[in-house]
Image 1 (cartoon, rainbow over the protein chains, first blue to last red):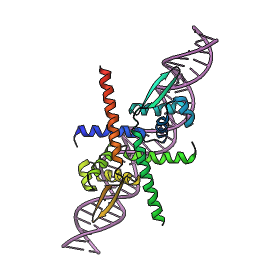
Image 2: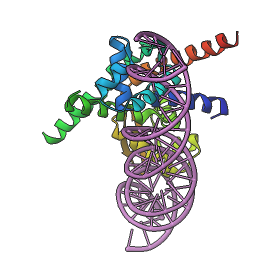
Image 3: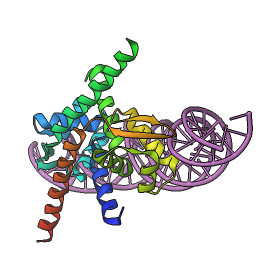
Image 4: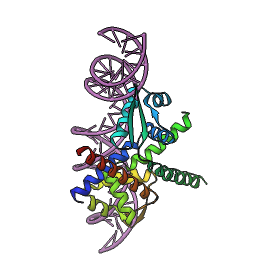
Length: 106
Length: 106
DNA sequence: TGGTTGTTTGGTAATATCGGCAAATAGCCA
DNA sequence: TGGCTATTTGCCGATATTACCAAACAACCA
């Protein structure tokens, strides 16, 4: 495991970690449908504005979303739609786990 | 955001979080090539056996890998190959970020 | 310019994650 | 059975993440 490969793994892990939070997952799913301003997302999530803003900055730093200032508001949009393909796989993991649960009970 | 959807998001986040670590990412990549026992992975990673074992148990709990006892050794294999599709997207994010860096430098 | 609204940043306390050591456990073999 | 090897579990200090409040910033408008 050379240093270069190690750094690559760390970079990848950071990007994945950016999505490893329920709120940020929600944001990504919502932005996959359409762009939203921080105020809209805050209303949907029901947390403090600063909390939502920080989640967005994490997603932005990871390169997953991008922002654009429009007057007073800041609008966010999904930058990498391929992220969505991934969700299908996650669902598959969930289904597989559910099946095992049932098998264990049967 | 009803409670059921919230729980679903938390479950998904847990699965993603399981991969959001360089060592666990390495394990997933290695297991995508072939099965390995804990001892092999430990040698490749160069950390304490207990540390590697814990990473494996996190991946197992998430439903990403499965284990099988063979004598003294425990062999792990990737359970959900679709996870690999995701890595392509992560690389895309990395490339997009790299491009921006270059653009910024002019 | 001063006030208002939308967003980000700084500080802080609660909680979670991580890695290594030591001890426990499991399976093999003499 | 006792010893040996491979793995897991318990514990603990160090570090990271999270959410909220308060304060700072930015852009608009009267």
